[in-house]
Length: 336
Image 1 (cartoon, rainbow, N blue to C red):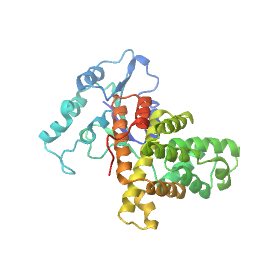
Image 2: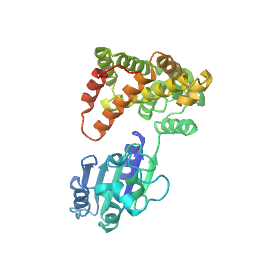
Image 3: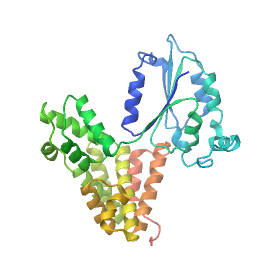
Image 4: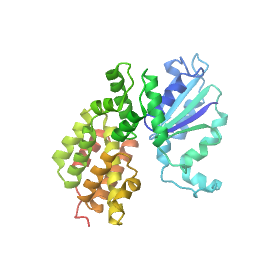
């Protein structure tokens, strides 16, 4: 039976899934033969019951499992060495028999696992490597990102110059959702002309980045009302709450890296490399912000956000509630 694992960038994974759904083996299936299952709440027996069923008046049944691999993040089973059966079983818990059960499933079942970024050492990913077609879809950077932008513009019927690509990625970064939105606007604006650097300067603004910096500042400073207002404003800009949480997580991670590098005495011209910032705007704002806050303040917020992010992904917390709690959360005692 066909088994696929698609994981990585939140923009690329849904598109790879859409392409898979348009292949001959899964196109035009009845709704009754399409099953979407929440991996954060799923048990192996329930998955096997669905996968082993015969499709209704169709030649195929598609079973999509979302977010299952994330449950196994943090469970390590012996580094790069191929672990023994006992170690693998312990790390997989109730999912130990999945890899053995897959070859026994009907050929009519198409099983697809989708997820965000997971580590190579994820035990479930390693267990599926031998029985599934695994497609890693990391967020592109550098030259790969430039090629992605060029290809995306061409798909929209336009063209873009190399300086415009550099300017756009410098301002927006590696966020493919935001890049795609800006490219849509640029293609409409240029109306068939090649997108040049001046078009990017005219159309792409940095207000979204500025709002992130302001929201993070308010959170760290304990200005709960302002923090919540700014976080809600980010959401009202057209992105869902999960995306806003990811934006704040990125900025707090950059702040932690910048503050740590500064505390270690890293030279100013090395900070961009240390935090992985390719945008001069993001680097300048991040360094300025890091100077105003201690490493303890930044890491406290970052750890709370990671906890909230995990709670959202595992279904233990609604995204809107996570934003409110992040804005209101204050440490029980001063941090040093």
